[in-house]
Image 1 (cartoon, each protein chain N blue to C red):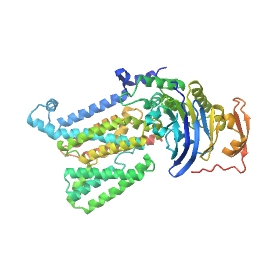
Image 2 (image 1 turned 90 degrees about the vertical axis):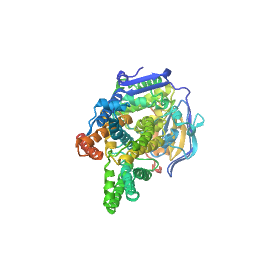
Image 3 (image 1 turned 120 degrees about the vertical axis):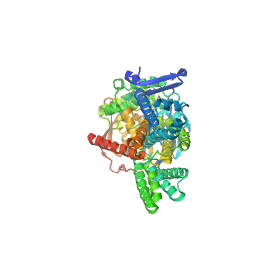
Image 4 (image 1 turned 90 degrees about the horizontal axis):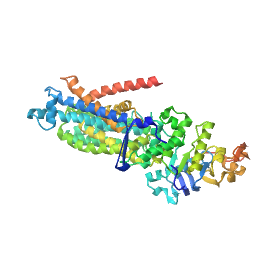
Length: 351
Length: 275
């Protein structure tokens, strides 16, 4: 009695300490994640090199390991690194949020923005800009509060002895639509400068990210990502249906609620600094699925894909149309449109 | 992969409800250790609900379910999942998953953060695939399998869980007559040769009589009769439980009771759903 040879061949397995430790991972998944993260790192490096002042790769590396001229250090570490790191990190966080919601709702349209998070965050931001002037800390706090409250409201409105994925999406779209009209109404009533400030925020941009903003986000993002990865196995098993998952000893409601909270926080961290960046959360998980071809959701692959997507999108936003600087949200919107077109063509071919 | 000591599962005076609609009150039944128990009854009699309570999916409002004398609500989730395996009515196979990958999912209750894939996991998965005769199909995608093969793959996943007790909710629904037979013979083999205690909700009374060693007949949330199929299945019971006039003969092949319907009983309680 032994396992099918091709199953063994497809897996990379390590064991240690007399079998007390044992991991097994699909080789293709491992390879795909490595390649995606490497590519994201390459784009990050390109972002450090490129700009009006072109800095050779060797000089960038020199700066990163602690040497280099003062001027080069300033450009690389203070101007370019925060934005480049933010693009990769935020992409990963958005990919995480999208993967969790698509898995839980069992719907390719599931993502934190679908349950009204982005619309609520925008409401919070507009209120902050209108009534509190819009210092970044107040803006970020208010946006997060708006997003969390909206997500909570959608969750409670959907709750009927548990959460049904499809209902969550429908209720989320309804609440989003209501909030969006409220947002428009507030903007129409506000002054021109307020409206413009809100509009800029609402596009989603990484241009203003600095290291003072990024550090706290980084410290918060690490535990969120680690916790989510711990729950990724139960999440995958829950895709077989609640009854199966519970029969395997998984506390389905606890896992689901924890993961949704983590996904919302992941998205909130991004939105607080960069505003709502559309479509990365939506597109990263299915793209990851196409690349890895493994069964079920892989949070790691979705994060890697998100990191690459947003890094590349932000690189294009910065350098693709120079000297014009686009908000990265405009670029991801184009990616999202292309993705939807592909989705429609794929569905049309199937039927 | 032979289970250790055959466990015994019993429901004591439980009340079962979905929200406010009560499905069963004061229900007491036993799944004896080492038995192949069939739970039978008309639609909406609460038999699937009972199975949910036995498998901890539904917490009884009153009373308790005991596994070897211990309330199952007090057993930690993962520990319970190493004792009792459940085959729900419907499941979703993740896109593109292969049979071996699916069966491997059954090992979850035996794994932890650091030990996610052990030698014991490999052996249990291989044994479960062997026991269900899925060796040839082990590398196939679940979506490519026929209905009967898919059901066997799911059973293999539950077997890989290595629980001495198996609960199955209408495992033969959607299967043609040959595949039903195949599945029932597999369960019978697991029960007789490998010592599994099995409880299954079954729709087909004759099928239940053929394969089960113990039967719980339910109507309207009550256990009307409990015992060996040969002892309890009578014309009166069939009339009482299903509202069916029938004649009971000995199955010419199996020798077990065979219910031949005559027609609906006149003042039969129509099988009106209570919820």
